Amino acid sequence: MGYSKVLVCGMARSGVAAAELLRKNGAEVTVQDLKTEDKLDSETVNRLKSQGISLYLGKNPDDIIKEFDRVVLSPGVPADLPFLQAARADGTEVIGETELAYSMCKAPIAAITGTNGKTTTTSLVGEIMRRSNPDTFVVGNIGKPFSEYIDEIKPTSLVAAEMSSFQLETIKTFRPKVSAVLNITPDHLDRHKTIENYIKAKERIFENQTPEDYTVLNYNDPATRAMADKTAAKVIFFALDIPLSEGIYSDDKSIYIKCMGCDEKLVDIDELNILGGHNVENAMAAAACAVCMGIDIAAVRTGLKEFKAVEHRIEYVATVNGVDYYNDSKGTNPDAAIKAVLAMKKPVCLIAGGYDKHSDFTDWVKRFEGRVKFVSIIGAVKHQLKDTLDKVGFTSYKTADSFEEAFNQCVENAAEGDCVLLSPACASWDMFDSYEQRGEIFKELVNKLDKYQ
Image (cartoon, rainbow, N blue to C red; front, top):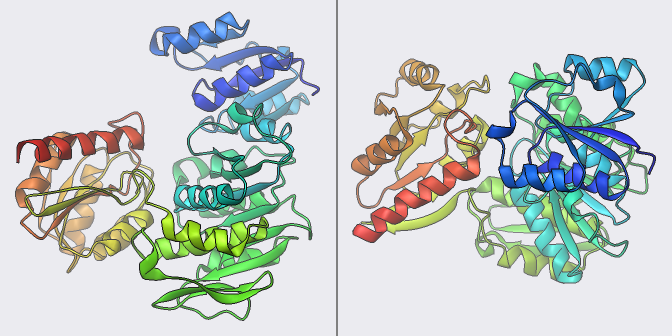
């Protein structure tokens, strides 16, 4: 493998998985994290130590970086930190956990990226492929890290990988059989600085592909449509409400496939169990990926019909006193939150706000008219979001100092026939450890209502 003395930066799930994989393959491993040991999970700390993995905690590794011949980054660690620039200047290879796992993976990969819809589409691709090959793994920016599965993945396996821009920043040789870019809207500009940098990170998903591979692109999105000229792979477009001469497309009733030797209707839209036009796009993208991975059209059709919504993504929770409750905690940017609002068929009481990713909320707020009846605002963007609502002229809102207060405000303002929607348009890190934790707490609050109704 060529790794002898390796520094792994970041002690989240991906970093821990990478460290354990490297150690298992004979490398001398040190894990670095800015948190001190008392702030980290003691079970994880003890497990790493028991494997002979060293820990360097509480600060950046500027003083020790020269000791290593490789550096492996967790996705949450910015790739442009000074100690990483110094390492590269000294000829030290710096890669991400995804690149590490890929270097040991012999199975074909369908890799999916985009601003929104990655998790639903990747889950759906995995579900479809598993119908043809039970030895299918769903990895990456979803569930378990890629590195954690490497010992189980065989050459005869299939892999569906969700890829974030953070993961794609640090690839080197990563080459999926099928890549997909679902859409591009401004996101993570606190890290990428410009939309151009963000797009370039996304485009890395196909940079090592050849004409033997496939790139699936959204025809409706100008940024992704333009990528057709930048990939060496064969391009398969999907399009919402646009009939394509070749590709996968929909009208207002059905999804059709006209590529890869197929020319037929796939499914009727009302046969899908996932809500909203954006999920029609996700279904088309997943179908394209699966067909390009060699999956039989019958398995694709069945998978599309039987797939249920992914947790925290416009997830129906319960109906209490005639009010529907939906958990869209994964709506972590304005574009995703727009899709959730548009998917609702009833007047919406909305929980909005959270960590500041330098997003512009104007387009989102403009969609509220005729759809959203009340907004409860929380989090670090509270003042910015309030200013945007005032500017647009939306006055039916309150601010809340806690998540539970925001939830209760929405409950109080929701009447029978309405819905309460958690789709914050922001990341969760100002108040929660993750969007998953935020969504779980929302569901717990709903279930308490259900219990006492």
